[in-house]
Length: 109
Image (tube, rainbow, N blue to C red; front, side, top):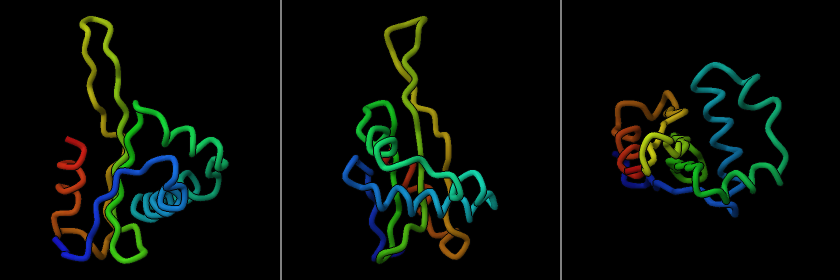
């Protein structure tokens, strides 16, 4: 993995990184319409990033978000436990095969 790479858990103060991660998802998934064209307003994203049951982790190289993971904690009903579900996981094409996705999953653990 690239030594200049940082893995960052996004919080409500990381609105700019979250928007760059959304742009990266749109590019990586070939779905700019869903991820880029109708992004939520700042208040919505700040609220989401402040929640304990939503986890956003970005892989950052320089000023560029090159990978990202979004996960949700689901509180279960059959037992007093919860599970994490990875909703989105992507790495920019130029940065693939460098262990970034693995690093994002390890950060989630």
